[in-house]
Amino acid sequence: MSKINFQKEIWEGWTVGDFVRELEPQLDAIQSGTSWHPPITTKKELKEWCRQNQPYYKRAIPEVVQYFSQKYNLK
Image (tube, rainbow, N blue to C red; front, side):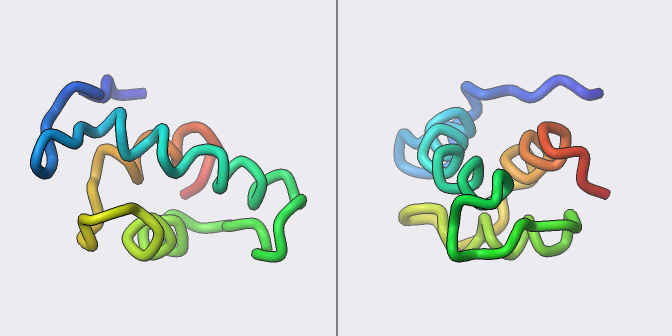
């Protein structure tokens, strides 16, 4: 497992850690089956979901995708 720099600034003061904190509750609900959205099963799906749901910045952030793919063991 590679180390993720949560302090890296991505956009106007928003860091990797900020984006992770913003998305994590929603993604936890999805992955636990308590959301209307079906669980995400691939890293490709995860990348697209993150891109669409993160605030302000609509490009995939590799470190955010990496964090969640490691957390949920997605390939």
